[in-house]
Structure formats: structure tokens, C-alpha cells
Length: 272
Image (cartoon, rainbow, N blue to C red):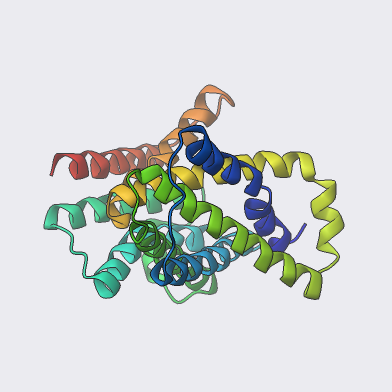
């Protein structure tokens, strides 16, 4: 399927799992159904559409043969998240947090270019290339989505933070699914049979997407979005662990240095 169909799968097949999580919290643990205000709907909606377009751009990026530079730039997301948080909500970071963000971003960018002929130097000098601009735009949208989701969750007055995060997730994933489904019906109807045909792997994607989003949203409720994004860079290390232990792949020196920098950024963030 195309980029639109693949993006839809991420949201549409996650609805059952997101709703199940919310129902367990509300009805299983007897928590009160939260009241939602205008601030919630505004920021949750902005974040939802920002995430859709950010995901679409990231998926579209992989259609280019030279997508490596763009992928590296998409990983500037933590820094862009910090900028949005400062401009929109006045959230400030300490000097140590800024250094931690910078260290982790360099580590991720090194990993992104480690298996290609592109060097870290050319990544920084190719900022105006097509893939770099798409990657930066993707990171920008994900950064806006992160601060938007945090603001939406915090606007919910409730005794339990997981109810705040799960409510935000359910609203966002339903809105995203309806918006994308409408687009597909109107403009890309040929994607529908492809999506239905791939329902088994799509369910797995939906489960992974919904549970990961619940983790993201819960973390955003508890901590500044930019700092959450830095800690989340550890996914790269888990990816390498999987490739080494399950697929018996080897990692090169640049990738090892990148992993060390990501770990250093996270450790620095925890210690400050």
C-alpha cells in the first residue's frame, strides 16, 4: 500500500486497543469519567493532525533512495520539541538538559548515516536537500504534536495521570482515523482493499502503535515533552540489541559511538 494507507494503519487499527485501555481504567478501576474543556480539544486536535502529517512525511521519506539524510534530520525532534514548548508555553530547560538533548541528537544522527557512504559532515552540509527538508518538517510536526499532547493531557483535571493520558489517546486516535478514512474514501479509494487485505499485520501495527502512544502520552503527562523525547532515543539501542541477538547482524564503529552518545545523553539527563 502507499504512504497514506500505511499511515492510516498506524492509527485505525490501534483504536480497539486504545479504547480497551481507557475502559479498563474507567470501569475496571472505577475512576470518574473526566470532563473535557476547550483547551483539551484545541491542543489534542492540533497535535493529532501534526502527528498524521509527520508520520506521512516519515513514511514518504523511505520512498527516496537517498532517505538517510532525511531520516537523520527527522531525529532533531527533541530539539524542535523544546523550541515549541518554550515559544508556546514558556517551558524552559536547564543548560544541562540542552546539552543532553544535543548529545543524544548527534548520537542518533550518527547511527542514521552509519551504513551509507554519507558522512556526518555531509549531513550537516546538505541541509537544503529535498530529503533533509522533508526530514526536518517531519521532526517539526512531531515536536508540535508532543507539546500539544502534553498540554491537552494536563488540561484534564483528574486524580490519576493515566486517565489523563488514555483519554487524550482515545480522542486523538479516533480523530486521526476518521480524518484519514475520509481522505482515503474521497481521494485514494484504491487503498481500502489493500488495507483490508493486510488486516493481520495491520492489527499488530495497531497494537504496537496504540501501546507505544499510551506510553508516550503518559510520559508527556508527567514530564516536559523534550526530555521525554531524549529518553525515548533509547529505542535505537533496543533496535540494535534486537538485530544483534535475534538476527545475528553486526554493528559498525560509528553505530557503537552513536549508541554511546545516546546513552550518555540519557544518563546526563537523569543526573542533572
